[in-house]
Every structure is written in C-alpha cells, then in structure tokens.
Amino acid sequence: MHHQWLLLAACFWVIFMFMVASKFITLTFKDPDVYSAKQEFLFLTAMPDAGRSPGETHFPEELKPTGKMLVEPLVYTQRLELMRNVCREDALRNLSHTAVSKFVLDRIFVCDKHKILFCQTPKVGNTQWKKVLIVLNGAFPSIEEIPENVVHDHEKNGLPRLSSFSDAEIQKRLKTYFKFFIVRDPFERLISAFKDKFVHNPRFEPWYRHEIAPGIIRKYRRNRTETRGIQFEDFVRYLGDPNHRWLDLQFGDHIIHWVTYVELCAPCEITYSIVGHHETLEDDAPYILREAGIDHLVSYPTIPLGITTYNRTKVEHYFLGISKRDIRRLRMCPTGPTSDDAIILTQVG
Image (cartoon, rainbow, N blue to C red; front, side, top):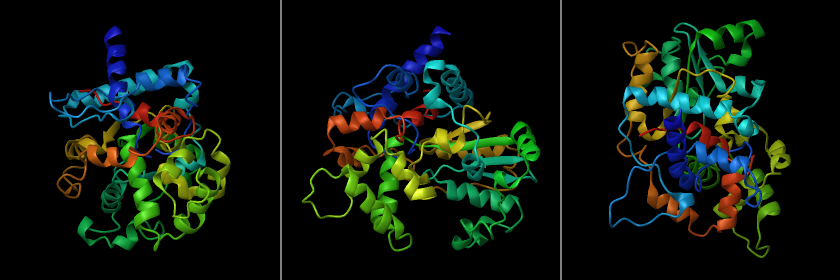
C-alpha cells in the first residue's frame, strides 16, 4: 500500500509540469489561492519523470514533461489500479466523479458484434479508433476504403452511440463489454485543441472563430486595446476560471475538444478494461486490439513517425508568455482541462 502511494506521488511530479499546456478540457479546477484537497488530488495522480540528462534545460514545475516510456503489460494494470485509488479518495470526489449522463453515453461508441465500447476523447487520435470500429461493425471492408467525410458522419458510419439504447441495454453493455479510452498529456491536448479549432480549422468549423473566440475575448482578454484574434493566453485564462461553465453552456457541445476526461468518459463510474496513452500509442494500440480479441480482424492505422511524441519545445513556446498565476489557475481550477486529466494520466514507469 505504501508502495502504491509512492507511485502515485511520483506520478504527479511529471503531469504536474505537463498540466501547463494542454486542453481535457472542462472538469473542475481550483483557484491557486485555495489549494488543499485539489492540490493533493493532482499530486497523487501525475506521472513519473522519465529522467533528465545533466545538460538538459530545467523545466518549471508546472511544465515538466512525462517523457517517453517503454510499455510493458504490467503498466496497463498499474494505470487502472492508480485510477481506482484516486476514485476511492473521498477528498477528491468532486474532481474524479461525474454522472453517467446522456452526455457521457453520447461519447461512447458501440460494436455489438465484438462486444466493444470505445469512449471518444478528442485530440488523442480517436478518429483512427472510430475507423477501426467502423470496419468491425461491417460498414466498410477495410480502413482504407472509409471516406474521410464519413468517419464523423454518424448517420453513415455505422457506429451507434451507447445513448441510443434502452437503460437495460446500456447497463448490460457497460457490465459485459470490453471498454477502453485514450488519454494524452493534458497540456499538449490543450494546445492541440487551440491550434485545431482557433488557428487551422475556422473555414470548416466557423463557429469557433466567429462565435466561441469572441465570447472568450470579451470576458477574458486583459488588454482591451488588443484587436488581434483569440490568443492562447485568452484561452488559458478562460479555462482557468472556475466559473466559466456559464460560457460553456452557450458554446454547447463544441467544447468537447477541451472537456476533461472525467466529464467525457466517467472513469470512476465505468469500469474500463484499458486506458491507453497517446504518447505510447505505438505499443498501446496493438495491445488493445489483442486484449479485445480483434487483432486478427483489423489493424490500427499506421502512426506517422513522431506524431505521438511529447513535444517539449511546443509546450515551452505556447506557455512562455503565460503568467504563473494563470498557469496555477489552469492547473487547479475544478472546471479546467488538467485537474481531472491528471487522474487518468496514471502512467507508471
């Protein structure tokens, strides 16, 4: 038991530094001036440092990376055990627990033929997992034959959501099916969401630039004479505000790209079979397919070299101009994207 708590403490040390730069996302963070239980929560749920060579640049505590890890089968059991330990902590309950609502059920895709449930967590490569399930459900014979415009078209891709079933059918699947979801370093996920929705993709999803961005700027921009479009610091300040829920309601489901893993997948209420990591997806994807008993039927799409590697330079660049206070607020806010994400990022080296 003592060993487990040491692992939990070590785990936090790296996520704690990560937490400065990625999404999640939207659960509950705490104001930096009111630590206690939520700070303890983060401390118990971060990752171990992968080590630093003598001449390597020192990272601020809030931005320290988790590093690349060699994944062995025991790691998957340890991830789940660490997550269960956090879920059992009463002091952390408001950070780790959420109702299995329709919102959660809408995030979970079903493959009845092979008894699999996959909870979608944006910005961690979930599109490729959806392609895997589309093939398993028989809508297309191979991943290569799936048109890109069909993957996210839920009327054409043959992927039912768990919310489409009756209560009894939902409970049956939750109790008996193989269940998994994928997580990512919370700061990198946050950066990815910002780049994708506010920088790269406004033409196809104009509401991010024309509706959501102006709402964030009006409320959270400090320099009122600044006329540029939304900046990363505006985004961080918005997510670090424990009272930003009222704005989220106006944005609707579009905010799922920075909503926390707890809110998306309810990991303390649903007993998942495996939690995968974006940073170790090369190892995790084949393992998940094997454990689900489908590795002989389909393969995870080829992962481009370096795409899952933690990008220290990018994180430093994006957070260089962010104040320490805003970083602390982002890390501790009960409705921000890194507090409960730390629960799920329970990688053990």
